[in-house]
Length: 130
Picture 1: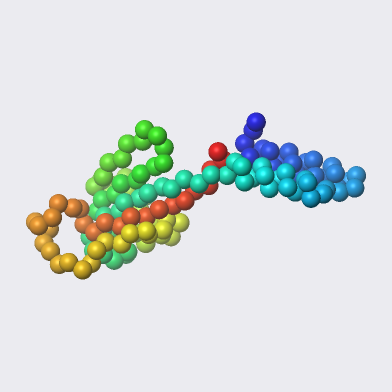
Picture 2: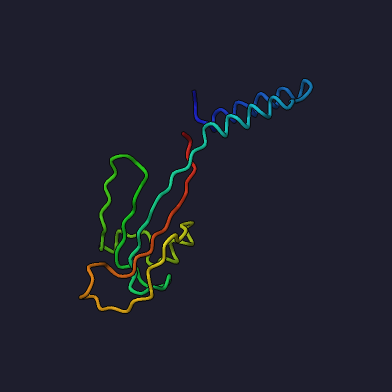
């Protein structure tokens, strides 16, 4: 069994041949729909971005990318040259969705807590060929 894309390409070739000899029918379309639905899966990627302020346009000072792959290791990095985004806004422009904004209700000094900046959590749902 090939990928869903290869199966769809084969289906298209067969449908073109059928069109020349009388056309395709509902059963052909049902087969195509079943190929796509049965193989389509989504994975949630998570990106934790730590920024200097609660604004989506403030500078990122730390990040952690959580990939939906068994055995993947995630570490918070503060090495700016490794970051794909300089702001949360940059990540949003690349298709990430903010699913958690930092709590802005409390006013406290950095010495009182052990966190790195204001934490935004973003997700990207990606369809993959299961």
